[in-house]
Image (cartoon, rainbow, N blue to C red; front, side, top):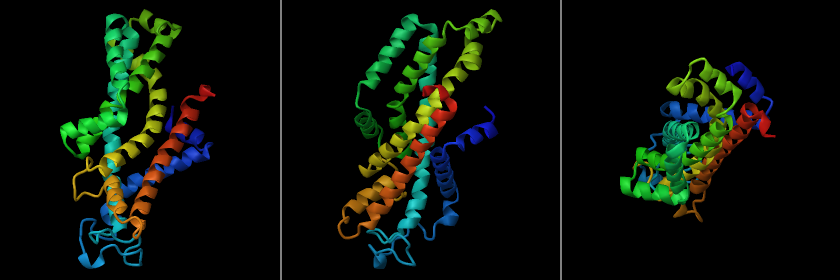
Length: 277
């Protein structure tokens, strides 16, 4: 679908277009963080500990005297970076396993789908925490852990779609023209699975933002002193009754980011899968 046609259809869904604008703004904030942040996010000022919002510190300071607004701005980098890493890992792995299982069938399908069922049967967040505990805290390890627990849903979805289309006239015509193997899978089958996978991914990214914050909250996310939203909430929880703005501001930005991906996912479903209604 041409980009201009996609955007024109998306504009018919104000909520989805709003979600897209918010995500683009977050990406710009992450990209231009050094120029947008009013202070060094890691600069500690003992004399300015736990200050309320003021003209000098618009959202106040944390328990180390660090500017909260600057840390929220820089915190968008690991959050969106983790989302990008999870996407890069999850989508190819899930689609590859699902397409191979659905197209070839037989023993390969049974092996791949049983492995997929085993991973899906385990609690996703607990499994991610276990992976991070084994691999060690860090942004890349957190993304890897979340990706390893997210791909099965894409594999099952792709496999179901391929089974439905396996004997369609479209694929039969392609095979009659001599298109087989990797060329058929990449050029004709993959494009049929991508729209629904992209819709699911946009909706799942909202949960991944929350899961990433959960890892940071437990100290399993980005390493200190890097600004990370989940770790900032953990710091704010210690003083939430007196200095409530620390946890409140961080929770609000996580809510906005998660809501934006949900809104975009709903809009993408209407654009890419109009038959879902």
